[in-house]
Length: 129
Image (cartoon, rainbow, N blue to C red; front, top):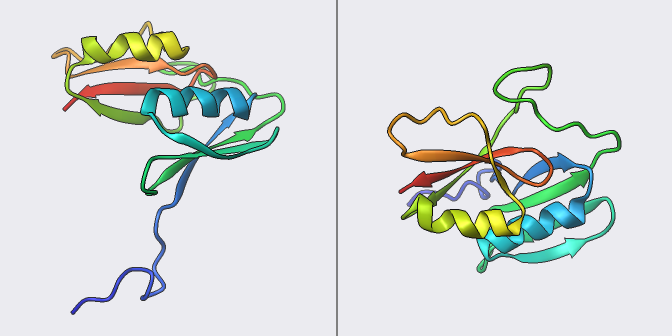
């Protein structure tokens, strides 16, 4: 019988935290596109998590925040989020309506993913599952 990671004292990923200028707005954006709930919110920090728990997303206010300039420029993306969808074209209107924009740079030659920017300028992808 194997022991759980927690029982062994090993870490378990709980949250991915994104810096941003407005945590409430960015938290609302991701809650909307993922169908998640806002767990807690104040002017400096917002947590969102899906039904049943699991890994959550948090948004932390950073004064003087500057969006990434990916794929080139002085501020690389550092990381990005990928979201699996059955049909990118069918999923796109909902993320655009929520406040995303289609990135000018689209590196997928096969069309297996499409790059967007969230309202704070972080790149994220819709990926055909």
